[in-house]
Amino acid sequence: MLFDVQLIPGYLLFIASLFLCFFRAVKAGWIILAMAYILAFINGSITLTGIALLLPETALLLLAVKYSSGWQGAVTHIAFFLLSILLLTHQLPGFDNVLIFDRVRFTPDAAPFTMHFNLDKPFAGFAIFTCLLKLGFIEKYDIGKIGKAIVAPLTAIIAICILTAWALHFVAWEPKLLLNYLWIWGLHNLLIVAVTEESVFRGYLQGYVGSAVFKRQKYYLPLIVSALIFAVIHTTGGWPLMLLAFIAGLGYGVAYHKGGIMAAIFTHFGFNLLHFLLFTYPMLDKS
Image (tube, rainbow, N blue to C red):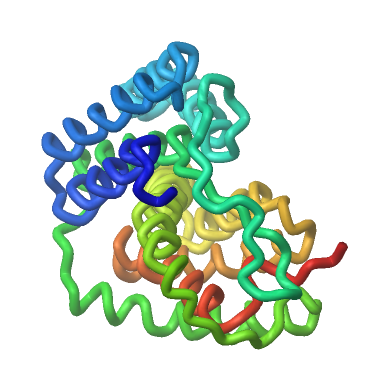
C-alpha cells in the first residue's frame, strides 16, 4: 500500500516541503507542488472544486500582504485565516485525501489512529511559508541558534505535557519502535504536520499578524493568542487534548520567538516524536 501509485502525490508533497521550507528553493518547490496536485487530480484525489478552493486562498494571502493595515487589511487577513483553518481541519469539499493508516492500534490499549496524505492542509502552510520567506520574516537558518532555541521549550513541554497527560490518564508509558510505521509517520509529521501548523500559527499568526496587531506589546500576547487558537482546532481528543495543545503551543511559540520558524518546527516534531516512541499514541482508548 505504501508504494501504491495513489500515494505519489503525497510523496511529492514531502519533496516540495523539503525544497520550499528546508532548502528555501521556492521555484523548484512550487513546480513539484504543482506536479503533486496535477497527479492528484488525475488520480481523483482532488476535484475541480478542491482546486477552485485553493485559488481564493492564494488570492486572499496576496491581498492580505498588499493591504497590511486599515479595514481592507483586517477583512482580508480574517478571511484568509478562516479559509486556512477550514483547509487545516478538512472542512472543505473537493478533497479525497488518500488513506495511509486506517484505524491502526500501535498498542493494544491505544485509540485507533487514522492518517491521510492530506492535499488541503499543507497548501495553506506552504503558501504562508513562501510568503513569509519572500517578505523577510524567515531569516537565514543558523543551526546553532535554532538548536539553542529548541532546548528549553522542548524540555518544558515534555515535562509539563507528559505529566499532565499522565495525570489525566490520557497516555501511559509504552515504549515502542514500530519501524514499519515510523518512517512514513515521521516524514509526514515533520514535513506536513509540523511545517504546516507552525507556518500558520507561529509564522503567520504569532509572527506576521502578531507583530502588526500587538506592535506596542510584549511578544507574549500574540504567543498566547496563537496557542489558544491552536488549542481550539485540536478537538478530536476533547478538552484534555485541547489543554495539552495549548501548553505545547506556548512552547512552540517561545521556540519561534527565540529561533524562528525552524526552531518551532523542530520543537513541534521533537515532542510529537517522543510521544510516538515512548507513550501511548495517539491516546488511551476511552471506549
